Length: 114
Length: 116
Image 1 (cartoon, rainbow over the protein chains, first blue to last red):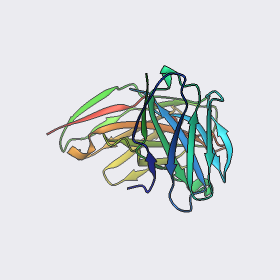
Image 2: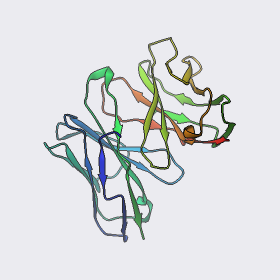
Image 3: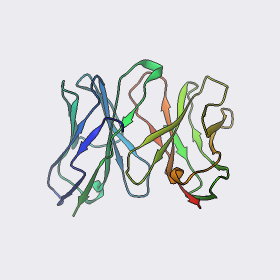
Image 4: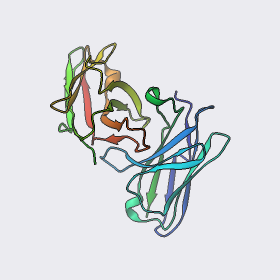
């Protein structure tokens, strides 16, 4: 058990809608990152938040946005959903300690866009 | 941009045997980390083993060991005495040590089947 929880576990939306996915990190972890895992693929890095500020982003459009809160929770928001957004979304939290940083992953939210 | 390639979509091994999963990567950096993650049906990514590029010694964790060939940009995972609980998707991943927040770059994964 990693101590990282994600909600909901499954979600069905229609094209054009907006969705918010939630992640609760381990207490004390100051960094959270989000990944998109399409079926049959490895996870792809969406973005990372450190102390409530986005400090890194992968090749994802601005309609993917996030928030990190002081209580170790975070959100991934996706606007104007497209069919290709159907995927497993994983969050990972860590306590940034330079070279000793270790990620703890949640079990993900499976998003289906119809 | 860094890339990670896993050329074996699926591997099968008899219980108690040894299996090796392959991974190659491409980078122009000299300082980085390499990882093997396990993803069981529960979908949670579990860290199996971690290697720092500046360390020449191969990492080991109990039954899991790696063969890190920096010049060849190869990073294979050896699982000894395979157990039924080892059955899962295995992902090789890369992360820069440059201090930037680039996240992990994953390969497409290898599905490991353990035959009883």
